[in-house]
Image (cartoon, helix red, strand yellow):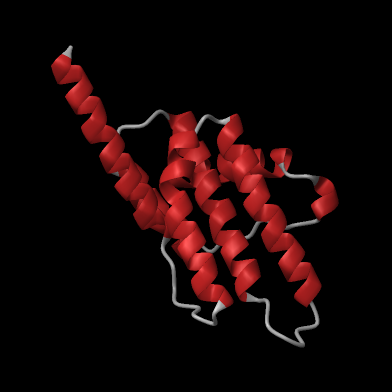
Length: 149
């Protein structure tokens, strides 16, 4: 099922992304596995898993492109533009698939990471951890709501 989930996610992202951007979606299996293990622990509809993996993929690629922004790099301008496009695409994608609460939850950590990286701190980030925290919080809120009813 994970293979199908990854294929469906990449297919959706390719269909949604502007072909003019010319960005190729490539993510290592290890980078996908971080979120796949999170998704397996939560009872989510298949389409939501696709959307969450899509968000994870976009954020991971955006961060990777911006990490490649070093002075005198031959693709410096391209990496900046790709990273910026991917961050705006992330917001469009999340809005389209109604993941605004996730965007609001992740915004402070994404901004802090961007600031750290602009100051030369390229420590490894794990967007799957933030998404898992969000899903745990969401589940707790749903449990409280269902108990109140």
